Length: 157
Image 1 (cartoon, rainbow, N blue to C red):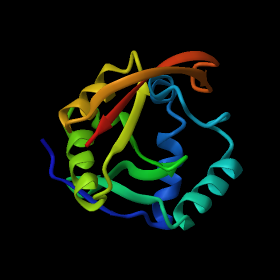
Image 2 (cartoon, helix red, strand yellow; image 1 turned 90 degrees about the horizontal axis):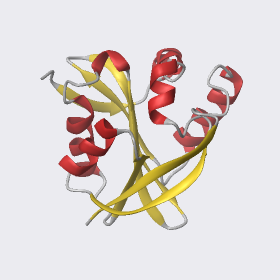
Image 3 (tube, rainbow, N blue to C red; image 1 turned 120 degrees about the vertical axis):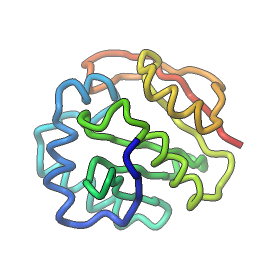
Image 4 (cartoon, rainbow, N blue to C red; image 1 turned 60 degrees about the vertical axis):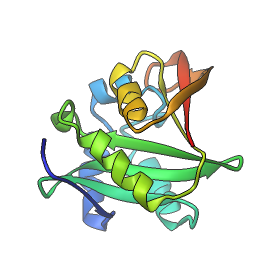
């Protein structure tokens, strides 16, 4: 497994992150994505917003020193949630699991929630490995699949 570390997101990460978030296989797997992954103006506006919002903890994920994605916690309707995006080149190497463990060390709020498309077995494994437990499901429109998708909701603490 590569050495996984987190750091603040830097302006120089954004071009690479935009490319990661345009990968068709990744978009399909994540399901709940931007309406148009190719819309750079919308991406830039979103990133400006999340990087300047005080109750969002957003970190770059590095694997052996190489930028491979992001991980964040944010508050929705009073609940803290986690999200992550790992480049497909780093899938299956334990990067997301380690990044989530590191994020949970710096975000002490509990409970914390995670969500994943119910057919995204890898992401569900990452959350369960961190101690999250399934608390329900929801169905919503997923831009990445252009249709309704079931989402599994998990809770830690």
